[in-house]
Image (cartoon, one colour):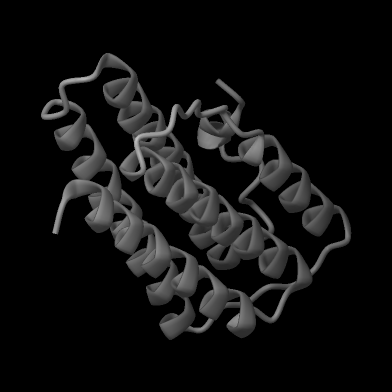
Length: 161
């Protein structure tokens, strides 16, 4: 399997996992976040498909972090109680681990491809996967500590960059 096929499979698996999390989430805000993450994986899949077909591709940075932050803030303002079962939190941590591995894969492959444009694309997708990782970290924190979560001084890392 070539790197594009492998990357497409990883992205499809990620999309399917987020769609499952979306179905299991009890909160509408979390459902929306998982839908956005699944949709982002579809975009990544399509990028790798186009690369495989030797098409020119440009990755545009998404605004997913600011959108997710707005959803979290709205959920907090509405004082939505989001207790998560241990198993649910573990699902989020598993998704986080998948994003971490995906990012590592894309960084590694960026070092292997010869075309500068392809290298840049792999690195940009790796950056997107890092954003997904951070979003999942915030979801875990939010469902674990909904009353104190937003005041956490580490929230700053979800600002757009």
